[in-house]
Image (cartoon, rainbow, N blue to C red; front, side, top):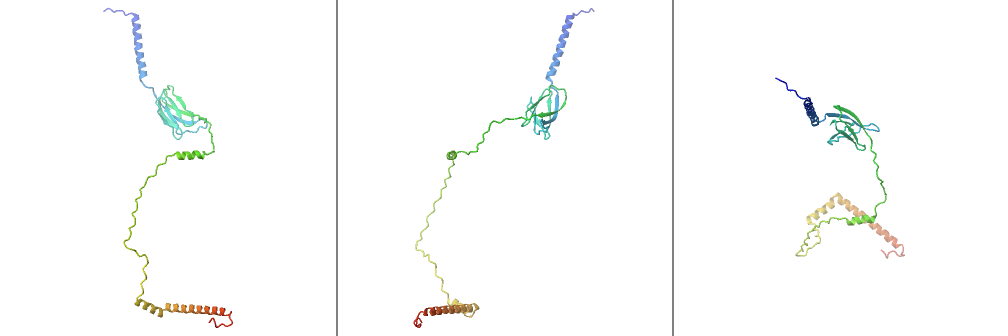
Length: 229
């Protein structure tokens, strides 16, 4: 069977077409597959004294997801080889770490943050108190809630008595004969009664002696002292 000759130009065109198809397939495979994952760990510290910064945040710039550093400033995060890590802490300037398509599967870094100096504006402090008139005006303009109105029921007048009422205290009852006899017998024969009578006699004698002395003192002024007696 005779062999039909094939031109060289066609062989060249067919080879270029095959190379183009293979190159496009490889490029599509590379574009569709995600970049490799890199496990990044390390410690965040201050640049001036190399002390760890607990609570510093490590964030992926692409997804804005991140983690917080521990008490010793250590952290661990998984990222893509094309990601950029952003480190932040209160009082420090943020720091960016670009992985730049690294081929490493694990990366250990030490991040040193520089303290951020914040300049405050001018603050004026005055020791004077506000004017008393301003305070009084503000107090007068305050809306005070009205006090609740409490209705007190009126009391009914006291009822008047139909008849006159005697408010004098009742007279003590006179002792009965039996009670008076018992008291007299107790006073005559008891020890307390005898002592009471004895005291009465002593007081009577003292009173008589004082009266006699007053008469004697008065009679000294008279020649005939019998007139007073």
